[in-house]
Length: 334
Image (cartoon, rainbow, N blue to C red):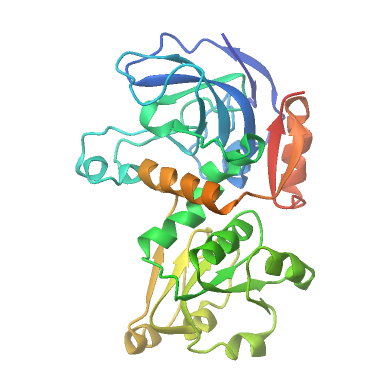
C-alpha cells in the first residue's frame, strides 16, 4: 500500500489516504519520496481549474527520492539511486515525437498528477525515462522545483536557440522567474527583469539581472523599444503585450511559459514589420531535463525555497494560495 495525502473534492483539504498501485509494470520505476516541491499547478489541479482533475486527488509532481523497485526492462536507473520526477511520468517512446527527442510532445503523454496519484506520498511511480538521476553536486532538498519550474524556464533557452550575446527580458520574478534569471545569467545573456514589485530589485540583481524595470511604469517600458532579442513571460496575468512586442528587436520573440488568463490580443503589423513572433512552451523533454541538471550542477544554480513538513501539507498549500512563497515550497520529512 502507498500512503499519501489526497483531497476528495475540488478545493478540499488533503487527508491521509492509502491505495494499492498494483504490480509494477514494464519500464516502470517505484520511487521512495524524500522531498516534494509544491507548484501552482498542484493548486490548480486541486481546485479543478482546468476541468481534468479526478478525485481522490493526490498532488505532487516535483519529486526527489530513491528508487525502491524497478519493473521488467528497466535499464537506466537502479535500486537505491537518487532520482527526480516532474510533470511528466511517461511517454510511448515509439511515436515520431519521442523518437526525435521531443518526448514531452508525445500524444500518449502520461502526466504525474493527471488521472493518477502524485508525489504527496511515501512512494510514487513513473516510467524509467522520466525518473532522471540527480547529479551529486545538486542539493536534493532544493532540487524538486527544478523538475517542473526549472525545466519550464530552461527549455526556452534551447527551443529559442538563445545565444550568450542575446539581450533577454523576464516578466515576473516569482517561482519561475527567479530561476529564469539564474539560467540566463549563467548562459551569458544580458538580462532585464520586469517586476511589479520594486522591493524585489536587489534580489533580482543578486540572481543575475543586469537591469530591473518596474512593469507598472509605462514610460520605463516604452524606453525599452527595440532593446531585447527575447522576452520570457512567467506570469499568469494579462498585460499590454503590445508594449513588450515593441521592446523586441527585429526577429525577437515574446515567449510564454506562464498562462495568461485571457486570449492574447495584439496588432499584427508590428510583428510583420519587425519579423517578430509569439511562441510558448510548457515543460521540456527528458533529454533537456538532464542537460538542465548538468548546467545547474556546473553553475551552482538552485531555486530559493521555503520548507514545510509533509504533515503540514495543508498549511503549505494555503501559503501558496495566498501568494506568500519566496520563491518555491518544498515538503520535507517530519
